[in-house]
Length: 303
Image 1 (tube, rainbow, N blue to C red):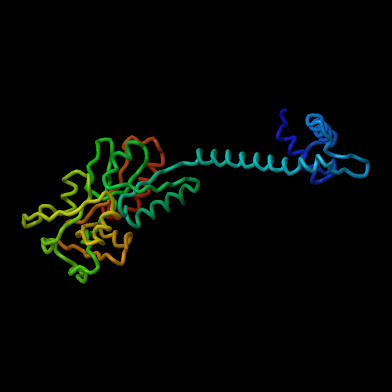
Image 2: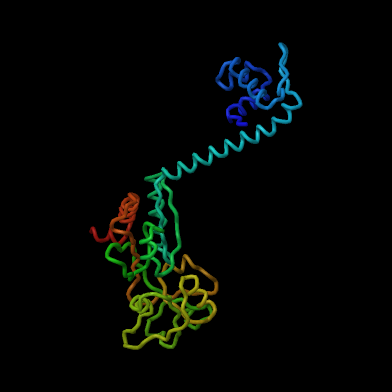
């Protein structure tokens, strides 16, 4: 037995109105057509659903039993339609997956996303946190479309990096560390410290962040490693060593147990926007243009 969903709806509306004329008007059909549809439904079910008389229409006991079931079917059908419409909207809306390593580009990340959504209100943005050295793999696999990451960052030839943000580097120490009250520090004053560092990356990148070798030719003592900025900060908070990070970490990863001290005599970190040169997603070019227009490094180069 197959009862069409529109007939279920006809029955529900008639049960609410208990009047063929008013129900037919709500359904935008004629009263005779509605009467025929209900009669056909009764024939299919083999029971009488409504008692009709010149004065009134009332539900029979079978009609009263069917009504809550019919309403549930109608509601479920409406939910399916709503779901299908939402899926269609999502598929039609442009999507950009933005990867962020550590603190990304600080406030520039927020400004770029806000400007993109203002220009394209129907766009969808997905933020994804990446590990220190996941950029090439995640861009190559399409898991992300663009990535904000701190350089230096060696990538395959088909991937491009554009400098967007430059920030000083800071020494991250426990709040009870002897250096914690300092307003700034020289890298040469940290020779006795054990440094925690990112794991699994190219040695030249890890060396750059550790400032190895130091300006005087010495090498830092190396301690435990971690594969995420949260892991590194946890090691510092536990007293396993100190760390060197970009200055924005002080805002994005503020913790009572940690203190961030500017290092005065090493190169700043440069945050880059990474993307695939032959990206098929048209939003990549749009987002790149938006970020470029907001970037203090690009703006400074114009004057």
